[in-house]
Length: 161
Image (tube, rainbow, N blue to C red; front, side, top):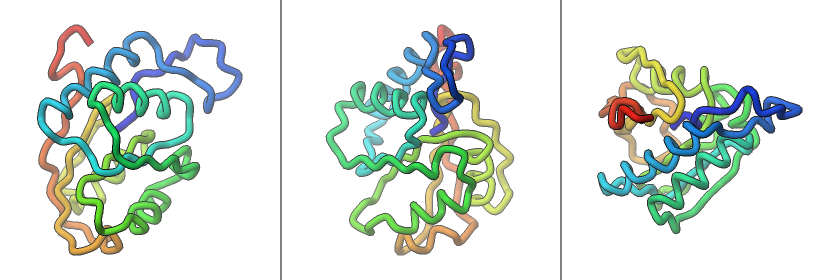
């Protein structure tokens, strides 16, 4: 998942501190309700520590009544795909469904790499891509050839967002 829409006019002193705007606040909660409705509650959520990604996580998890494990990863903020792979490879194999929340262009690149370039994706804010991984262990995540099951955005599902 890419973080929800941020507020460029907020007056935040740094990019890291930029909050969500009103649309982003609504979209993050809405996407949590979508995951809950589809019964796709993750076992683990890993998110960037940037303010907009952290708030996306908070609103999303509140809406889906999330009680699972959470990990905040500094490298998800301006880290590249290799940082994401490093973190995902370290996930314990008892986790079956994992949601990662971060930033573009890394998230678009990640989906493309995981699907061996078969899927050029555009991930607007609050978009969620569901990639079905065919692997025995999270340690094997670098292998490509996985399947993009779907990519949804708040606007696809709710024209008011």
